[in-house]
Image 1 (cartoon, rainbow, N blue to C red):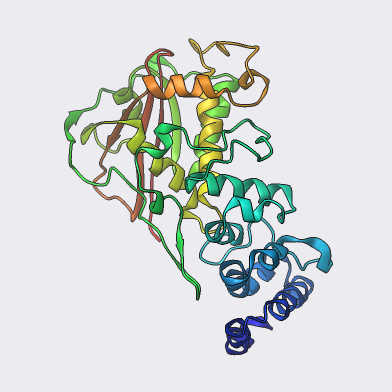
Image 2 (spheres, rainbow, N blue to C red):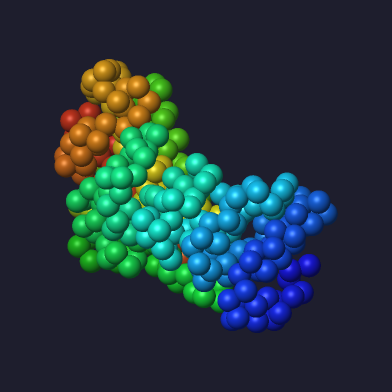
Length: 339
């Protein structure tokens, strides 16, 4: 099996013998699938997949995802080592290099959005996103973090460096806040758009809880905060956005592109809530199942974001309320996770 050939495979990589390494990857993955199934095969072959995705020429690296080697030989969207193999690939080459080479549609889409997160403008020349998510960052997406911190920094021999997900990260700018009693009489809004928004927010970080209430941010925080007296306060959405995107990548099988796509879905659904009764504009692309960039931008412009600290926060933690004053609703996401 591949895991027992580590030194030999590294020697082949140092000699640039990438076709042999790809053949070894495919042979090892197919054998592992036959013996132990897809999930086990992905784990066993991930270190070699990482090596190829990181260091091989793009013309060969993209073939990790091609089905031309036969059943069980191709890496899938969820194949990962320190992170998804497609994300490793996306950090190494521009879209200009990868676009003519990448085949599988799902992998191609995730690579495109990773390149957008890294600052590449794909709005001209790339195929439109199937959900209408823009292929370049909006100003509010780029404002709150450095380009180098938007995706894991992968290492050639395996592993990665990534910023810890902590929101709030410190007490700076926060103060003592008395949260109101949980007002069940205000009710929790429902409906398909509310459900889609909560589903989108929950998908960003499966280790969190989510809820939506009529009212302002502190009332929503009171639903999930452990104490009524907290250290909290308001932050600009541009500073909250990076944590929401990174929350998807806490799990190594997910990448930051998953976070960006999921957040756009959630924001599109949130923007469509008008007094909890449905879309502001049923004829908009969002109303047809895509995202309306203008509506999302307008929502972000008016949104108020409240965050608070919990007394026992995990290594990764996220405590935030997204309040839409125009719709009179607030969306809360809260949870923590140890590694």
